[in-house]
Length: 121
Image (cartoon, rainbow, N blue to C red; front, side):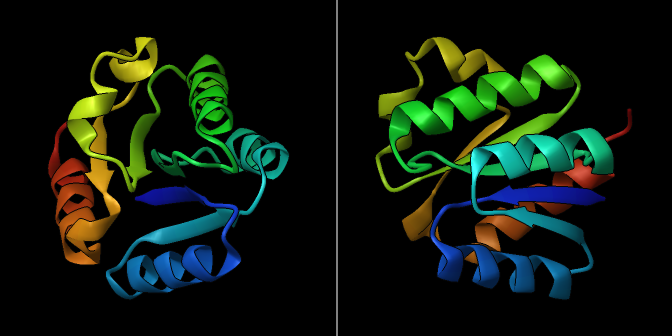
């Protein structure tokens, strides 16, 4: 599965790309919203992993809305340092497939992406 990783922290972006590539995923990475949208148009990923603070929470949520407007079938995982429960009441919550707390480590993200990859349809 091809995954778009969007994070304005270049070190975190690089690290996530490496981890996911080593776990068998095809990765395209973007450090800004314009690049993320352009890559979503041209690369047609099956999933996007978006940092909530991109560089602000509102910017991250704007990117989620734009990605879903571009492709309603795109799976969106939101990475956050905040407690996931705080985000479930946002209007964008219905656009997000998974909220992954950053402190949970990369293994959980990999497991969730592999489970998504195995889901039919």
